[in-house]
Length: 276
Image (cartoon, rainbow, N blue to C red):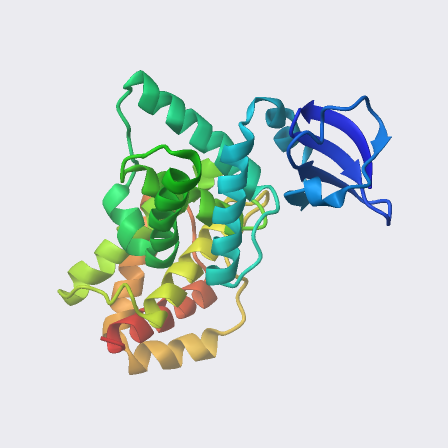
């Protein structure tokens, strides 16, 4: 393994035997003069591929133990969520955690946006985030408040999408919470947020927001007018509820939904309501 560039004494840029660049983490890997050949691979504790330049820039300031903890959290999330995650998650998460630790030491108040909504909208990610707080305490010796579980959840959600940023993740959580309230108010009952049908409903809303906010964003194109007419006859209550959701999206965000989008909303509302 060729070590090409030092970030700090324990983190460096390297190249594997196939010529691929990666970040390596290990005690003293960045100490010798660069470049050099690392023959004792037992010194390498972690390797990271496909790291972007922005994440590399933050490596000089990140404590190695915090990066290791973030890597363990990211690995647990990847296993439990069973979906691709952004390869830069360990670095963005470690950067956030470093800032959170600094605020704790300075006694600065913590703020968790949409705390109740995030916890109940994304129970799987939130459960991983709570475990992350224990991982952090065990590996780094820092006890972060429960409110930090919300921030970690948002980082996990942001990492699940191929494109996006924390602003769009917060927007998605806000919109999903608002639409959930609309459905619950319409049917006068709570939605089963731990159910698979609700998870699919929330995922559909996340993709809807991605479509609408993408450059040149647009709703799903028309094509199922006949199916929509049939569905609204069979499920008039769900159709009326979907109309309220469509009005909210138009009035609040300026997004116009096609009939196919209305059809998808109607069907997801039907599934989540009938799964109770």
